[in-house]
Image (cartoon, rainbow, N blue to C red; front, side, top):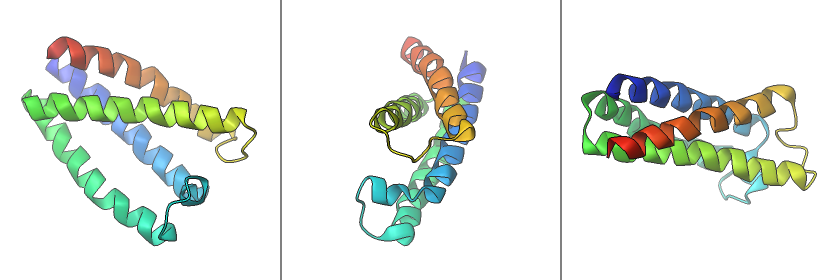
Length: 122
């Protein structure tokens, strides 16, 4: 089960990275009224991605830290889907393209089984 969780983690993390690349295109910092513009947006993500990549190694090793970070990544995927679904329903134009929506739906599709498997492995 550890290998399955590892691959769910890696693919879901890849989707989150794609979503954040898309977020830079859509200037997500404006959507959430974050200070710092693109520079602040990029600086926020640097420690997050380092932690997330370390988490992949921890998931592979089957450590408690890996399970905790797997929960974080799964919840982040669910949150991305839910938050942007809310904004899309409100008529916001950001993320309203087939590729953007595809990434969000893929995040939902992978985050749910990753979350379930992670919980079962605790």
